[in-house]
Length: 115
Length: 115
DNA sequence: GCTTTATATAACAATTTGCTTATATACTGA
DNA sequence: TCAGTATATAAGCAAATTGTTATATAAAGC
Image (tube, rainbow over all chains, first blue to last red; front, side):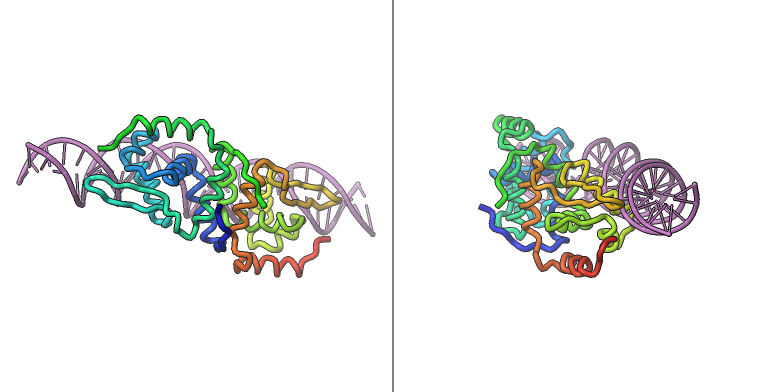
């Protein structure tokens, strides 16, 4: 259950600005479920590797994700302790669990292993 | 208490796209509290009348607000029965009730009467 | 050290956004 | 009917966004 927090208009709208892109919203939804390696995400989404990298950078700069370097790879996951956590969770909770795009992405993820 | 609903990625991101603008977010926050006449909003925000009108149009087109014509004036308020209602409420609930911009707007509102 | 693989950054084009000013529409009251 | 007030729409512009391709960086393994 997401607790209510107090965000300024600035922080709130900055966070919404990041979430409003469909690709990025789905990306973050996945990152709340488990950690993903960048190369897995690149295979799952129909955009170039730099595009994925740039989306992740936005999340990194906003402090919404945790990045972990392991060997050649970088793993990302949602940071549940970030100040915007309650907002992000309540927004993502509105997403239909059976949303076609989301289901398709999860399906793709199953067939992919990084390394 | 906002109930959880199921929105598609499309509807969800379209709604977030509307909410991510600071002016528009504050505008909608006010419209959830009580109805406002356009001319009141124009006096309260430091933007031109067409700018306010255009923000309201976005909300109207997204089905988030109710418009009521009374005489020469048009009154707007948030439509709590819209499909995105739970999302909107949970987003606005994250806004600090003492947010400086919000407090200032409410203060301005007190000094304004339309007609 | 060189090559391969993973990832980030830079530079750029197309599109979208949020304002502005100018103008149209519509209601009100003398 | 005309003038004033309220609101919407149109046109135009600067800034921001999201993708692309090209390139830089860094780790891994031969």
